Length: 191
Image (cartoon, rainbow, N blue to C red; front, side, top):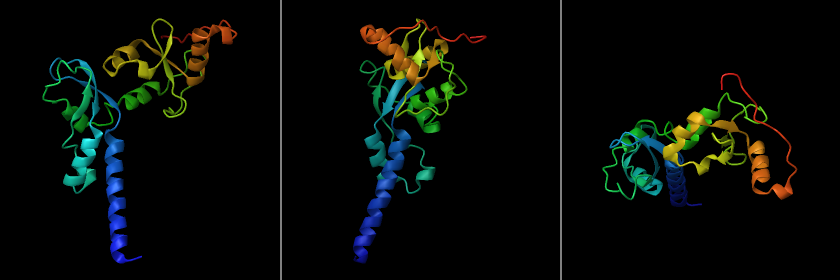
C-alpha cells in the first residue's frame, strides 16, 4: 500500500476517533437550570454541530471546553427559542453532571428495588433499564418523565428493577395474560 494511502487512512481514523469522542461526550438529554427563570429545563445539544466545530477548531480535545456548543432542543421552546443559550455554560462546566443518564445512575446507587428488594448494581441502560415507582404506586420508565421534571420526580419516587417493572406493567396493561399475586412494595425503615 502506498505511503499516501496509509497517511490518508490514518487521518481518517484520527478524524473518526475525534468525532466519536465529541459525539459520546455531548449526546443525550440533559437537565440544566434556566438562567432566565431559575427553574429546571430539559435540553439536548446539537451534537452534529459540536462534532463539526471540534473537527475544525481545537487541536487538543482533552483541553477542549465545549466551545461552539448550541442547543438542538429545550423544554422551554418554542416560546423561548430566541434565548441567548447562557445555560450552555453549565454543560461546558460539567457535561456529565447534567446528563439525565448520569443523574439517574447516581440516584439508583445504593438503592434496592421497591418490590423485590434486589439491590441495584451498575445500571444497564441498553438492556435492562430500571424504572421508577411514582407516588401513586405505578411503575414508569424514566423516559416517560420529562427531563425538566426529573428532580421533582426523583424526590418522591422509589426505584424499581427491570424485571419487576416489566411484570407489573404486564399485569396492569394485560391482566388477562397474567396471574396476579398479592405483592406489596417492600417497606424500608425511614422511607
